[in-house]
Amino acid sequence: MRQFEFFEHTADVGIKSYGRSLEEAFSNAALGVFEVITDTSKVRPVEYREIYLNGYDLENLLYKWIEELLYYYDSELMIFSKFDLMIDQDSITLEGKAWGERFNDKIHERRTVVKAMTYHQLSIEKTESGYVITFVVDI
Image (cartoon, rainbow, N blue to C red; front, side, top):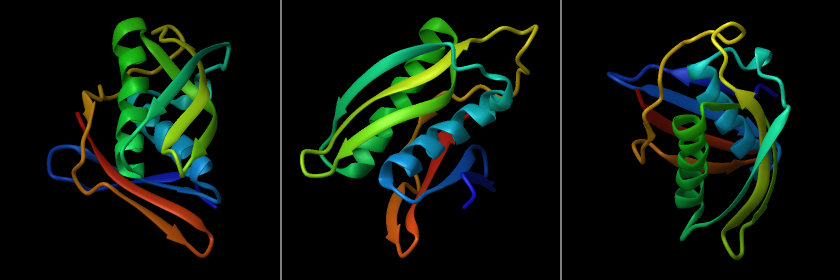
């Protein structure tokens, strides 16, 4: 199963992520966002940030998840490549760790800055093989 793919969007970047579980799909959504920013294969998982979130539905939880990761990029220049998550769908909470390192232009390629997560085209679909998440980020 592929992790994510990009799709055409007028002014922003569309991302479709996949996972056998909701946690895997959320992780791959985050990986897709950071792939817009840099080559995630060169991001070593040497530091982590603990993340605890709650939402009013799964779409809101995804929105908060991506925004939280972008907050660490904006405030600390943290880029991430590995994620360990637990999502409780009953209480709509996410608990996990995002692993990565600070951006270093000697090691990491500078691609496109992702300004924000959006609700545009945001959907989370349960399929026979798992989950498909579709969303757009503002660049």
